[in-house]
Length: 58
Image 1 (tube, rainbow, N blue to C red):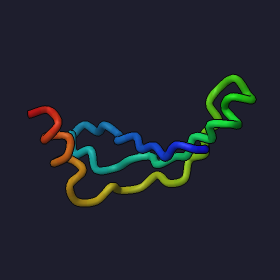
Image 2 (tube, rainbow, N blue to C red):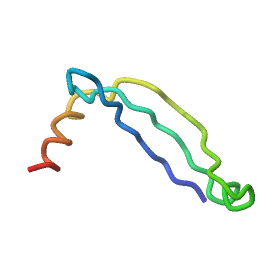
Image 3 (cartoon, rainbow, N blue to C red):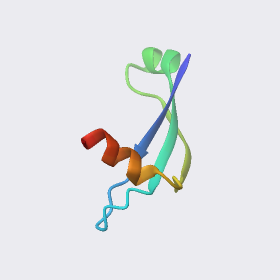
Image 4 (cartoon, rainbow, N blue to C red):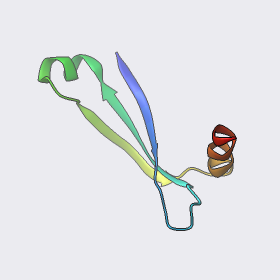
């Protein structure tokens, strides 16, 4: 079992168009007693990243 997660990076211009995409390995995390995380990508999130955040705050 695993979770796929994304962390949007804050920037001074508040574009919020870059992020970190990662995988959390749940069984390995249970065995380790702490999160086992693999960073898959650090990249631009593309069109709509800022719009999605704006929609949540409305």
